[in-house]
Image 1 (tube, rainbow, N blue to C red):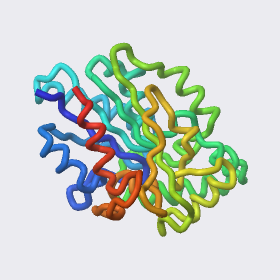
Image 2: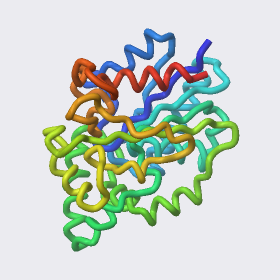
Image 3: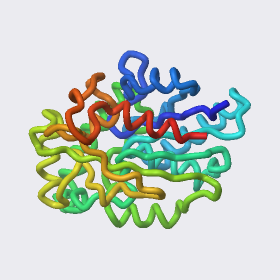
Image 4: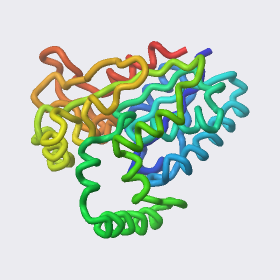
Length: 262
């Protein structure tokens, strides 16, 4: 029997019954025979606070299922939350694999540049974000510290303090948009990141997300590419009918991940 899967969401969203962060992915994984669970952490909590929630979820799942271990699939900042729970909080002994999709393991050069803006402005934007997310259920939103955790310096320090856990298989995936017109939601950040770092998924460049066994850069099979939103099936539909090499439906990527899980 396969180990259960814990899905850990990224920044800006929460696990919700009304709008599943992962789109069609959970149903597909269940059809493949996996038990699927969710992280349930804050959308804008710090890595440390969210890591505590993830550690608690891992403990709950292990006790509920009786399994020795579980698999984690994490998107974006969720990969950092999971690594903190595994390394600093000692939950790595219960994890067989950690697969991260566009997680900023090495920080963002773009964030380095943006945080050179006046600190009072950064704090104002962060405070507005925190107020809004408290309304939507976050218990400990802390956008200001979350923003700073994405710098390359903070990422380097995080990696030093959170080494890989023995016995865990780490894999990572990168994605890129074809151009700014690929995704209406991500066109502007894609342009900004492109200016500083080259091709990206609307938020992160491949350089930032490589960790463990790098599974490569996933590209769409048409002129659209794959955005940060596409990575978690935001539109609940395939990108296009396959005409050439590349990904035409994000479920292809998750099937590839799932087929190699213990």
